[in-house]
Amino acid sequence: AMDVSAVSPLQSPSGSFGYDINWPQCKGPNSADTIPLPGAPSYPAGTGSYTIAVVGVDGWAIGSSNPCLRAEIAWAQSAKGTNGAPYDLYMFLNSPTASDTIDQNGPSGTCAEFTGTKQATCLAYNYGYNSAQIAMSYAASQGASSPMWWLDIENDICGQYWSCNKTNNSLTIQGAIDYLHSEKATVGIYSTAVQYKDITGGYVPSGPQIPIWVAGAYWTSPPYPASYGYWPPSSLAPYCSEKYAFAGGKTWLLQETPGPNNYPFDPDYAC
Image (cartoon, one colour):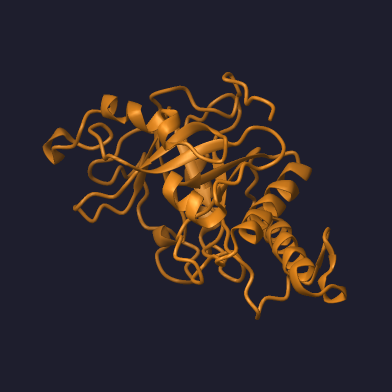
């Protein structure tokens, strides 16, 4: 695999902080408005200035678009950003189910023409490819575009969001990566080493080395007030190591896992 440049303009400077948001930060299930978000002018308690902004375009792949995406992009554009890439986008991914129809046709062919394993692999790849196309199209319809897209790969109880066939799951992920690459996006993966291995068996995608966004890091002060009693950011260094990486990738971002304070935002830290 080609190495991701350590000086990629899409990689935030080490030590940068920010937040990721999605539909849970909308005012309601179908609201185009958001709750108060981190940063000026509101600065909800405990949040401060930020340079990382990651915005989700959907809930679970198909049929669950983020209704307040446009408003969240307006928030994201007020991030200081880095080198002309002020925000990243992310999309959820899962396995196709029997009721899905977007997987029937695509780069792997017309799946009804196949049987058995070949049909299953056809459906898996097409679903990932077409899911990414739908997510990018929806984002564009809401005025959202980014050279950096993340695939959210989580929930590793097989048979729930992901099938128990790790080969097919890997094809779905590769399909999404391939579509986004065809649109000249840089593609990273959000997960944990444990969940990613449970879902894919440790699949290393073809193409450029994958940037990694590791979930489950400590909460720290900053960005949270000292009164919260969290660890200092220096405690995050181990999460940036290869031990926590997966997919043959290089860790760019960490997501700090919510603490016991019902805080409605996930902070992100650049390795």
